[in-house]
Length: 426
Image (tube, rainbow, N blue to C red; front, side, top):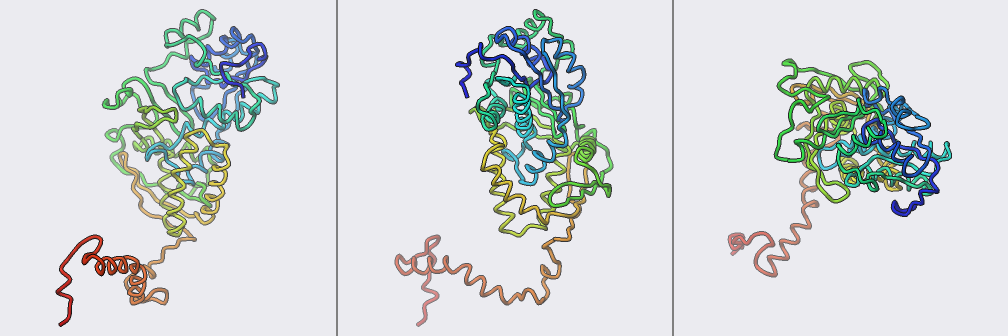
């Protein structure tokens, strides 16, 4: 793929722009026409961002686009990107449920496919040169079609502020009435909403309550707890409170339930891929419920070795997703492992939601490895408590031999030096 600064602008005849309808991507349309002399096709993936889609097509055409393509990808987003990541147990730096991270490879994938269908020479995005998203878009394009050129205006133009962008929009008759926004930079989809900028640029400052969009504060949540039951089949959520639901319907319901009970807020200072730290706040009400319920179901369905190895893989999986390497051999290989672990993750989990707290009330599965009679203190055909003595002797034998050799050679063990003379016989 050609480097950004080496693109021959004369060779770019048609560009597919990842278009959100916000101020930045709106001015990119006339900027591409003006600086590359090319046709611009705007592509928008509906991942559940809601009101952001209103009037989007008309705005793109008025901004200079020759064509606008809008697709509802919510179900594909959930089934092919969100649920596999949840099944892997992947969480970035303890808190972030990767809501933006796994949305970008899907958008970029469709952007590449549309570029091929439309005979475009390049794709473009509105990501800044400081963030992670530029990497996710471009690495995806490199993996799927390295012959496509990638144009990143933020790394080329001399627009440096919101005021500059507004002035450019007005000069080029770009409609901006709907692009005025708060001091926060946000990304939203059916899984989450992220907030950056404004007061959050100082990690000592507490987020203001008005910033939150998907959830109420714990203080404003109902005084009575809400109890729900989630049903899973082979690791995939399929029902809520006894009702079978498709992915989109289920996710919307969980977001509403979690939001009104103050579930899913995460304040995090994270390490960006590009080498700097950033402070952000994430709202993932339904996703937090799903992660918790799925983890609890796994606790009774997976054996110790599988569960512990899966926890190790979850860290690497999260890094791959965060770092934009969704379309990598390692991610595919990890998915193969995860898929096997999910074969018997079938059952129900009962949860209590109360003022920001998510309390597990019960879990059950036809494949449960938990048996009360095996775990009890009584005798059973499966386990005899007297067998433990021999097990402990073998388990601790390396430590015992190490201590005995150390005492014989130095007069003391590796970790302490008690008076062993009391044990000597006359």
